[in-house]
Length: 154
Image 1 (cartoon, helix red, strand yellow):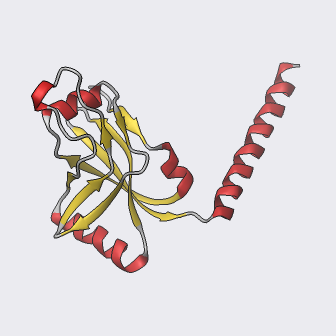
Image 2 (image 1 turned 45 degrees about the horizontal axis):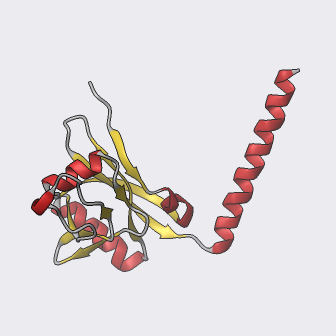
């Protein structure tokens, strides 16, 4: 049995947002987009998801054009449709509309069956002081690990 393979990740998302829940969504892609993603030529940096007319859409996801794609190539930053069950989309719509959450893509990966999937997070934005606290906590943990390693060495 194969494991899922990450094609692209959004590292900045965990720094900028408090992640509440994650969901798996399919994505409607063209052939050249899939080939380009498998080559690692994608970027989720400023991308976000939005619900419009009962559909979940992904904006600003950049997938570079495939080198051998010739005239069949795609637009690198086109809006892409995410595929989820209607009740899941309506549940997310309620959170986004009423409680001030955002939908942020965390990673794009290939599942066991060879399908490209997107991991979407229901997230709230962090304030500047939250980011500083996280950085300070990580630095403290790194320093403690360093001290423990030095003590084990002797």
